[in-house]
Length: 352
Ligand SMILES: [Zn+2]
Image 1 (cartoon, helix red, strand yellow):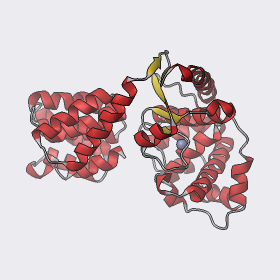
Image 2 (spheres, protein in one colour):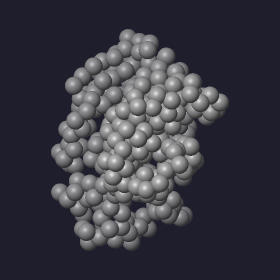
Image 3 (cartoon, rainbow, N blue to C red):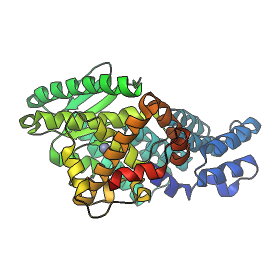
Image 4 (cartoon, rainbow, N blue to C red):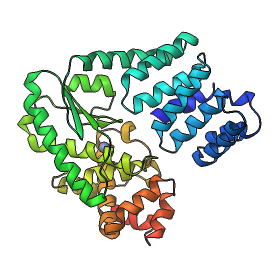
């Protein structure tokens, strides 16, 4: 979601006015090549360290490389140098939101809209963020070292405790399997089903979401605590994978791993795959499952799960290394080949 809006905003990026290394940098960004872009903007900034356009470009490059923290500090500098730079303010808002800094996201969009009023989609986004901030301001926080848990009202206290235990258990389990222990404090927010839909705009079949924060609808979930543990673990895996592979993973792999680590029996998912007449092609599973209807989504998760499980078995202790390769921009095909696995092996797990 973040990246799409960034590309949309790119139309307003200052590349058309630039020449030399900065132009090379913007061209690299359009191709999605973060490394080339970062190198080009480094050269541009060596010549002119106070060029706000190149600073914005360098921030976009950092974003493509999975370093939103770096992108944010560079954008702040760009806005100090050129306070009326609307594009930098938009980017800052996007990256701040992705990092879970809702206040900074709101302030940045307010600033961007002050400089450049009339952008309706940005205005709508700002309204949504303000609603989210207002909702959270009434929430209670259960602070911790590894996890902050936000929830509404004392009646959710018991659920928050359960969520906290599930998160700690997932932290240990995923850590021992993948060797990843996210250093930053992760925020988990507990909602009613209606609040969850409002904030995440997720499809009706979604049981949780991760967008830099773990978001879970929990009302009534103590009636099925096992299901709550499953969802909490699933979303935590997404958070851990972001730490391990900040540039992202193909969707089926990300979802497949999150499903694989759920502390439940997945026979029902395998059953879904067994009774499917056709499977979804791998290329389609690389993008978000959000567009799929319930039946297809289930099949997509089933395929992701069986492939992730096969990889976990085949790769064993090399699994974290493999994920780092993919998360650092190596194509999936190449990363698999390094460990003597092919795309066909993955697809084979879907046909059996
Ligand atoms: Zn998921």
